[in-house]
Each structure stands twice: as structure tokens, then as C-alpha cells.
Length: 496
Image (cartoon, rainbow, N blue to C red; front, side, top):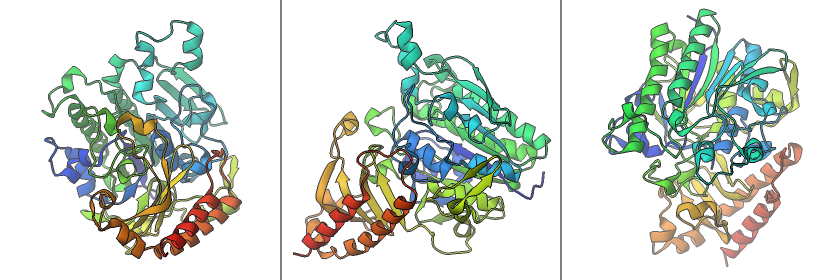
């Protein structure tokens, strides 16, 4: 099938560590991920790709193209929560639908579990999947879980849902049953089957598709099926990682089978960094710390993209790229290269008109090699409470608040606010070790205090953007003015 508009296939794992992909680790973990590696080898690999600090934030950043602080989707969604995807925030699916795309989402969602938050009311024709992280799904099986029916009805997780849009602003919802520990062994096989069927159907209809495929692997707790045990030779977690790669292979093989690989953009990534405190049931990263912290290990994730004939095979890019950038990039690939500008003034997509600030950039010229540098030079690290923890500008990172706790305590202990930001050069110290190991670190920081002047100007610009398009659900602690004041105080103190 030769389409003027490319198919778009987005393949995600959950909490995947940067080092769990053998393209990155070169097999050091004792197993291979040949199918994920294939995307990297046949396309583009990123070294400085940023997700978010947790599941909901990472998924919201991707599908809306906005910083999660704007949409209010910074915290991990729990059963029955009132926070979810707003109808005022367009999704990639909603913007692609008027361009002729069939849209399907398969696997984990985690953008709110009430009916109004489900994907089939936000641009997707079909959804099959679960709504939470795995450890929340298995709570009802705990012996101490309350036996009161009203408790489970009010606080318990919904089952695996199969939903269809009716094309008129409504949806049909079918609950296929709970995601039990036993079903967790094979749920990703179910998800893959549905995604493959959807691709077959759209191919037969000669329609371009946008498919967002999200496995439950590799979020803890891991429940390997008997057929997968021993595959890696490195324990249950890594056995499931190999099985995850096999499902990615099934998706890629379908494109080959239908003869549409050259007409399809394939992107692989994950929502956030690994949840290392649950090791050995956890992902691995060479970067400092883990998810829900200010450190690189929680934010920098594996990411690869392939578009044969458009993106040069074997390319490795060192520029800053984030999940927020895919909305503008995919829309440009589909023929709408000015979506970011149009949404600022009001853009009609289907029956809705959206007016929002997209924080992402069109990366298409960067990916094709038309331009040398990424259009993105700046990145905010924002906590689930709305605190600006750190900022990156080009090679430089400034840490305003740091998580000092280890293990599960990194979810319990507060971030520590610093009077003078810590500073890192992420080219010379990509693993952020200097503050703990260098004898001359603070002398180096004092010598580079002038860099904070430039950061003040960037923060001032961000303040203006947030005045025009304020956060839809504003955490009490979100305060850019306070960040600017901190930088101003610190830049003065560093020079005394």
C-alpha cells in the first residue's frame, strides 16, 4: 500500500531502562533485544532523549505535545481520580483524524479512568487496554484488601477495557474482565493481537493509520508466563524483557508482511526512567538515580525512530529531543507542518476547535538531516507536585531542588530546595557525578556562575508563555516567578 501520508506506529514499553536495550548496552546485560535494536539500526537513535518523571506525565507529554504542568497530568493516576485528559487539550489522534487517519490505542493508558478520559473520546477510533500501572491492578488480590464491596467499587481498578468511538462524540465500552496476576502473564500478547488486527483492517481499507501501542512490560511487579521463563538466562525480569522484544518483533513483522514498512514511521520508547528501587524487578540505566527524581536516570530514556528512505539508517543524534516533540513532528509528516502556530490562534479539527500552546518542536528537518541541530535547546524537569526541579539549556543543567533519598524513600521524602543551584555540564559529566566525587566541583560552579544570567532570560520567556496559556489544573507549588528569583539570588551569590 503506497499512501501519500505515512502510517505512524508508536511502540512503547513501560519503565524501560536505557541499558535494557542491547543496542545501548551492547549485550552487557546478558541477553539481546534484536527487534528493538532493528529500529535503531535501520533508523535514528537518540542519546539525549527525555521522557517525564512518571507514567502519567510521560504519556500526557507525548499525546498532547504539552508540558504536563499545562494539562495538569503530572501525577500518577489512581483509580477513581478526578484528574484526567481534558477535552480542551488536543491529542495527536484528534489532529490526525481530519487528515484521513484511522487511529487505535492498544495497551496501557493511564490518563484517567473515568469514561470521559478514555481514548475513544479523545480522537481514537478504538482502544483495548488497561488504565493503571501493574502493581495497582493486582491490589484486589492482596489478602488484606477490604472485603467490603463498596470499597472495591469506589477505589478498585476497572478491568481491561475494549472501547470504540461512535464517530459522533460518544463511545461504546466493554469490560473484558480484571487484569489479574495470572492475566498479567499474557496481557501483552492480547494487546499485540488487537493491534495487529487493527493494522490489518486499516490496510485492507487502504487508510493510513496512527497506532499507539503500550505494553505493560516492564513495570513492576513482573509476572512471567511459563513459556518465557529462562529465555534470558538472567532471571524473571529479563525473561519478560526478551518477551517484550519478541512482541515488538511481531509488530515489525506485520509491516513487512503487508509490504508497508517503507510507508510507516516506527518510533520506540517508554514513559519514564526505571523504577530502580524495586530491583531486581527493575530496569537499568547508567544515568544517575531513577524515576520520580530530578536526576537524569529518571528522565533520559531509550528512543529510536525509523522511516525508510527519509531517515538515514544508522544515524545517532545527540541533540535534545523530548516526548512533547512528536505531536508537531508527526503532524508535519502527515502534511500539517504549521500545527503549532495554528493551535496558538485556534485550530478546528473535526467538530472541535482547539487553542493551546504546544511545547514541542517539529523535529522532521533534524531527523532527515536537513538541519544539523535540534530546534530544542531547553528542557524543564518538573515534579509531580509542580515544582521545577531542574532546567537544561544546551549542555548545561541547573538543579534547583534535589532528591537525596534512596530506595522507596525517593517517593516519600521531599525534594531539598537549594539556595544556589547545582550545575552540571551533561557532555563532560553526563552521569552527574561531579558534585559527589570531584574535589574541585564547587570552585568550578563559582567560576561558571555567569551562566545563570542566561537562564534568567529563558525563565522570563517561559513566564510569558504561561501567562498566555496558564496550567489547566495548577499544582499549588508551580511558581516560575520563584524560580527566576532563585536564579537571580544565586547568580549574585556565586560572584561574591
